[in-house]
Length: 404
Image (cartoon, rainbow, N blue to C red; front, side, top):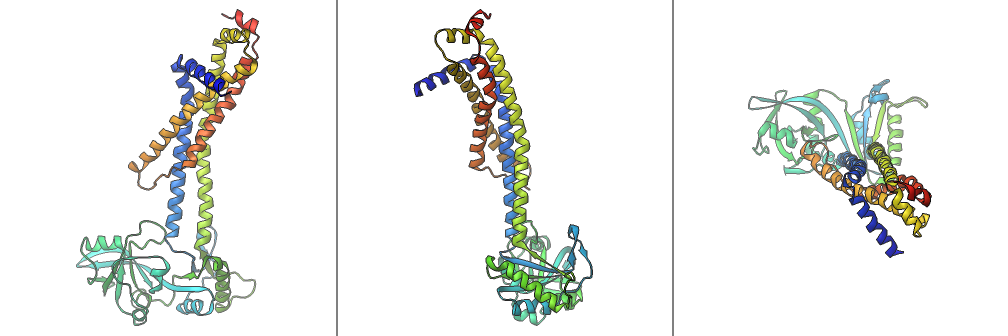
């Protein structure tokens, strides 16, 4: 059987090579379809990994409590109860399983340095925030809890903001002014890149200093907290909700006046959404594979018609219907397999070229996707080659021999 198959493949290649242009046109649809599938899946996978990486950079087992109830579209609705520093302390002291808590007070601010004004984000928080959000320093240090309690005018600056304000100068020890108040820079954050909650364009100061001397408020913008492990995030979230409802005196049956955002849930939801997006991209591209398969079928039908006499001669000297059918199926698979292989290579090259045109997405080509595309292209060859092969096998040898 292996010798028979080998001989069939050789005859098939010889037959296809005798009409190179037609064979190339038959394979073209598969080439375009396969390369599109590979490129689209690479873009989808790259986008998925990028989104999840940015979310992961916000820290593990993190929850964010913000004032107000989040309605549709993320808009705060209903009565907004203010979050206090006391709420943050109560969460840390009274909720079991909470590893650390970081109060946050935020405001946009003009940052002055030797007459130069730069727009940035003033971020008042505690020293826990840096550990909680996996923020690393390039040089210098972060402020301590003791310095937070003493309302000190010290700051840790984000990488991008530092480059804008100071250029290549080391910012540690320099003085910046916010609303006329001088802050000594004690640390510079290592660049983290774009993403939700990126610290790169922020000036971090003790939340006590920010609230009392800059913003002039007793209310927090949010409270960040971290559970001790992933397995207890759901129970910690429930306990925090119960505690805050009690502290805010919310009656049974009334809606919360705060929102708890669980970053692990967001990561899970985003992973599902990006999976659907990836499959949708691949599905759209796969339509062109089907079109390519129809092209193969049309070419093979024409080939059967042209080789009617050859089929008659082969049947006359003893070839069975199965032999004829196998011959034409093999030729169909050779065309689609060749198209699939070329398509995979072009798809990978196309995906690798995308970063030269845009830096927002880094495509990721997976071996599984390439193998699947090759398998599907071969399968399309079999599926769309079945009818022409069956038609060839059913030709009457006497009628076939009369064919000119």
